[in-house]
Image (cartoon, rainbow, N blue to C red; front, side, top):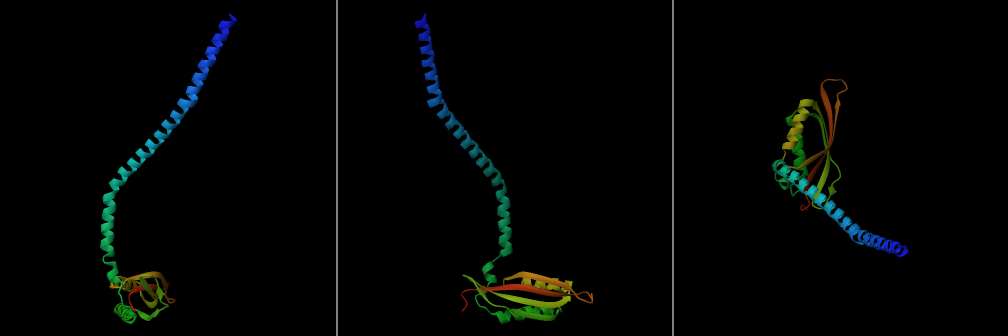
Length: 179
């Protein structure tokens, strides 16, 4: 009887060792691999879903690019190769005169250089009605040279006569090819 119990215990131990070995060396590594494959599959499914959602937005982005290309137009055509600062400042003065702006000051500041562009900060001051100033800015936008407005300061006249003092810092550009 003792031999039989011992034989059963040995069989249980051997069965436990086989089951333990199976779980430890076969089931757990395969379970980890299955879990990793499921995570990869979920990530790929998410990427595919995101790609499908983004592909719906693609026509919207294409339309935005077309609109931006219309807005920008031929960007480089608005950056002259020559400095011709005097001529351009005269055009700004003429524009101010056209809109009857008074107390005009147009003063270029130090020139700055970049790889492909040179820029000249210009300080502009004048006085006029708000509608005249807005018309002046629209006129600036219509000029055939790239201008970036850095800062605009509008102050009411001390007498509250309806006139506004305008101070603007703008940057004008020209190509680096200019001598």
